[in-house]
Image 1 (spheres, rainbow, N blue to C red):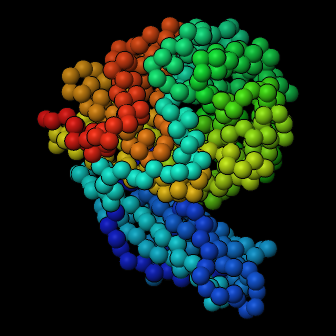
Image 2 (image 1 turned 90 degrees about the vertical axis):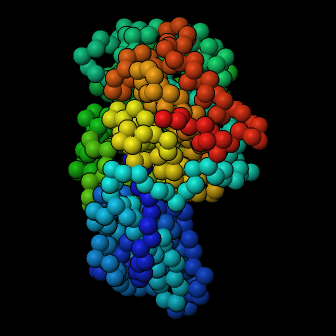
Image 3 (image 1 turned 180 degrees about the vertical axis):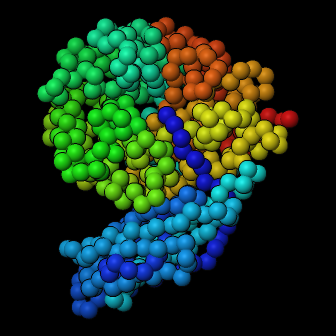
Length: 531
């Protein structure tokens, strides 16, 4: 689960930065998006056209490092910036490619700052847009994105994939159990305490769900040779089969193998040494080879997801670590694609999901690279969104949105929420790259006003996801408790609704499936609770 902090409002600050591909020196500005190419002429008689990926970068107020990849033909030059909060370092030119690392200092102001990097190679140039959010002031903020505006529905394969997924549900805290103090080897002895049967999935289908995500932790069921216990594979396959037979799409992943860098799939250990990286990568490939081989004849209802919320123990990337962390994350996603494709069968063209750091939308947009793939259009980006954290998992507030009482809600509201969705829409869907929100939702609330605002949160956020072409997967860990990270909608053993589950799921179904022209983001926004 977990923490994706929405960006506060944007206030333009003029910045002009010039960076020539190459020489490590000077300063610059940074963030994320899809690649751009130059409109200028060729350089020094070379046929290589200057191009830059990404062409927009976004930093949160904490700052940090981000990179752009520059393809050019001229000898590496210089980078420079007229702003003291931005510096940059360009790598060496190799095979007409260099990496420019941009570092933004923390922004203590509550105002955002935005600028333009102009990357030059000879007579060619490409602009990169850079934005850094302001620090939260604790008061209300205004986003540049209208929370009632409906984006254009896209006529492409990425949008169609989201339509296929519909709205989804997570079998949370079952197979993803990883605390070694629990008993393993006994069938169905998991955190959620549930005995799963086919009834669960037929019920989910009847409630309107089109897809389920089945998170799985594998390492406690692997021997010293990294071979997964056959009985465990069969158990997972049995549950996948029940979901398939109910007519549901399934996302299957490696989940808490990467938990907080404490288990074997550790980002922190991988960046510490080449030897660590090599041994972890070998185990990662061995595991995915077994999973993929076991399921290779399953139909395209089944989607594999490389990992869950990979991070170093912190939900925010430490300053100076982005380049090294994403070098590993991007490499592992490529290894995952290569390994799955090599097993053949239906895996040759199966849809594959890839997350970024902590599955955080902002970091994903900023740093994630789409792997090379022998199958066209078969890689989907996976993110998680529990924004705003202080309202959902953090539990500091019981109200949310533009009608919340003063001091009773976090400053991040509907505008901030759709700002994140728009970044995913612009970066991926508009470029025909599928993307889904693999975890989302809000923990259980007690009664009265907290429940009223949760109902609004659920309807608005799922309507927003639908409007922006994003399929959301509700996190459910089978508990009716009202504390911390407790999300309960459906009893995992019986498939019956838990407390208020029917109400919330009905609102999600309404948000996703209603096609009436009068039912819009604006109409939902205008129906927000009144204090």
